[in-house]
Image (tube, rainbow, N blue to C red; front, side, top):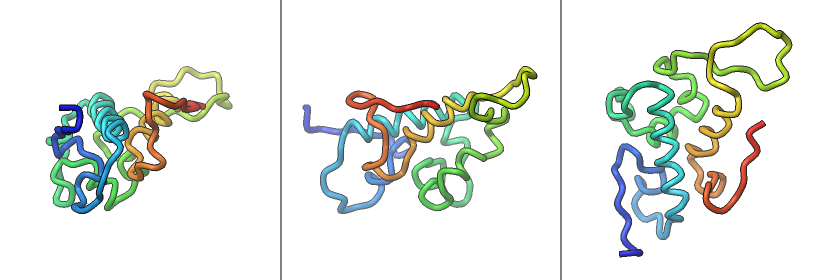
Length: 126
């Protein structure tokens, strides 16, 4: 069963949605799925409920068509992304941390060669 891979299309990375891609890195596939779950937590919405005429609730399709920045700017993410520290102002901010944005960006990276693999490498969150 180690060579079997099961995936829900909503959480599937771009490389699984394109036929004929050959072998895939299962850990990178899992990392993208983890990023999709994190995206759902941040947006307080299920990906299948975020469907529009282009992506049918599939984050990979949306990112492929519209880009990673567009996904991070979707209106379902109601709190702002905070700037990277150190901030110019000492005022308290309400929003998602810059580190969380960097982590999410690394997990839902559309190119598997650039996608972070949480099980075998480190990522700098600053």
